[in-house]
Amino acid sequence: MKKADIKDDEMRAEYTRADLGPLVRGKYAARYAKATNVVVIDPALTKAFPNNEAVNDALRSLLAVATAATSITSRSSRTPRKRVAA
Image 1 (cartoon, helix red, strand yellow):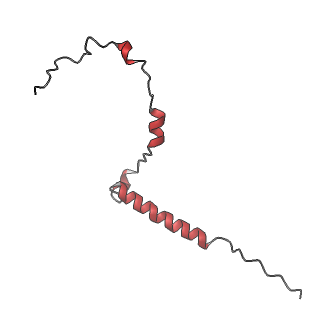
Image 2 (image 1 turned 60 degrees about the vertical axis):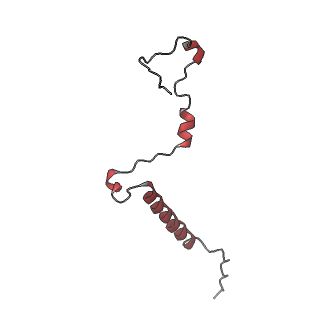
Image 3 (image 1 turned 180 degrees about the horizontal axis):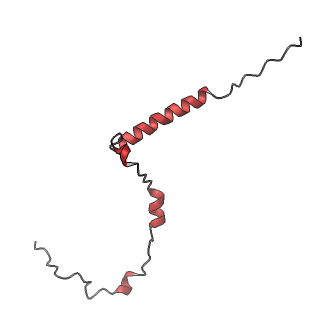
């Protein structure tokens, strides 16, 4: 099978611009923004966190410590004792 020899970067004569429909700038920008969550870390931290797995592990352990600390310091559900008059 022979490869097609494409010499110019133009549309074929049978296609017109009107056949392709209206152009919309940023048509999928909102959908893309919802689907992505890119966070840029400080360059000084890249030595400690070389890849996304290292960042995710650190954040998971921090979340575990934070949730454990909040459960320890939460108020007791026990009813307070009544004071005895002296």
